[in-house]
Image (tube, rainbow, N blue to C red):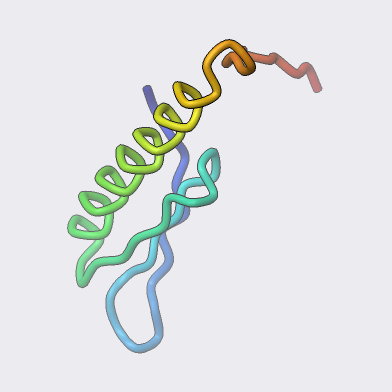
Length: 70
């Protein structure tokens, strides 16, 4: 699955990066490559937490896809 990220160069050096689809997935790195590697790990961790939360809700929750046309 592909995710959209915003990669920003920081004034004090390095890069910050955040995932648009998963607001909790935020990371940084000294280089673009490091920041992108780190955001992949952050995305995986956020998804793991979401999956655990859904499992804990049992029959009270489900995941669905919604398509919006502009």
